[in-house]
Length: 339
Image (cartoon, rainbow, N blue to C red; front, top):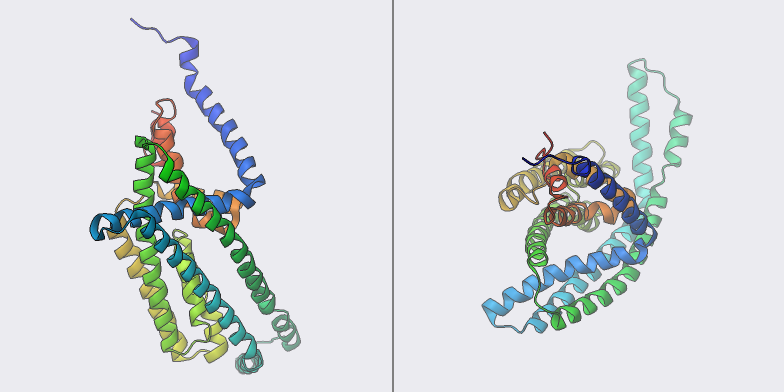
């Protein structure tokens, strides 16, 4: 009868320690080299999606793979350019109407102070006026403008990586089972996410345009981006237009209508359509999704939060391939392997 040796008894502990050391080293590399790794990872995911679309076009429409891939790149660059134009125009429009918004804000504050005095509530009007003057609205807009410039510079690097990835795929050998499985699952997840995010962005633009919101185009673009952040993103996209709606209309029926329709839109798109199309998604436990969101946001900022789910899913699929690390993959999926 086989008797476990001391080395086999401590094997799970050894594996856990090795994973912690490897994870610490990889985290340091991710932080130190994020200026290059982030565009590369974005290009890698885009390459997976574009190759899937190009393969579909080749199968159904007899379009050469190279032509389909180039069409996908041009479409991506066109959408990125339109997003930059929409955001720039929205910011310019908001800045031009800053005086009008300031007057509306002062009128609303005066009404609130007057109402508070009627109910015998003491307020410090000078403190409120000073706090409102210090609101970092224009600093936020300036930061967004800098983000647009950074996005354009990263776009060039992403395009270069896309070209090299395509050339590597065209001249590479046959893919193994792990790479094929990763590409299949990640491409399906990203394509569904892109479609769902586009639908949410379009509906957001329609709702905000219906009530005449100044920054409707910018909020639509932000909705598309934020929808990639699980759980938290749609909530932020819902409440993001509230300050602008308040500055434009105050506590008006248009503000209430817009918020109600936006909430309904994100509920239907996120909890019904996306759940139906993705099913179990990437087979990650909800607690793991939140933890990975926090980790990748700390490592790579907003981009890390956007890519948290597919990156964690890739790590899980790699861990599943080896017997010593398979229990950790089960842990990421919410299946407790240790009894």
